[in-house]
Length: 156
Image (tube, rainbow, N blue to C red):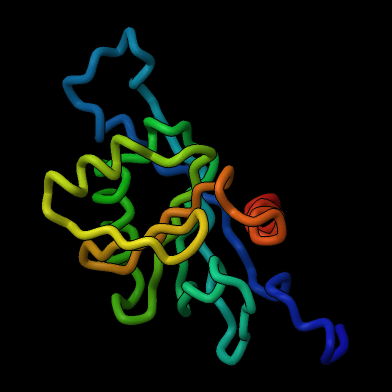
């Protein structure tokens, strides 16, 4: 790999499945909440690697990216679970990104009810802080180039 080819592909990613069934304790299993899991990758961004897009610019040294959830699956329970996993990394050097096809209305409502401010970081990207820095990338709202970059990253 030459100097001009230094891309995020030099990061190592690890796919992990986060079991969310405990997040839906007391939920009606008939609605399909039992044994829910979200696909997640964990990776370390090499020191000095600059990612020149808004989604990647948010990333820190240690990162969790949740992808593939349905609109209703990305909620405050997932945020709590990810906080636990982020605690395994250093708080000052970790970030979490949640991806959803559509804007996760339930999560946004739950954050508002908890008085956790959410700010728009740009087209299709929303940020908030709950112990750690979080961003939510709404795939259907992202510009095509950033959407393709993010989909390529989670496809590895």
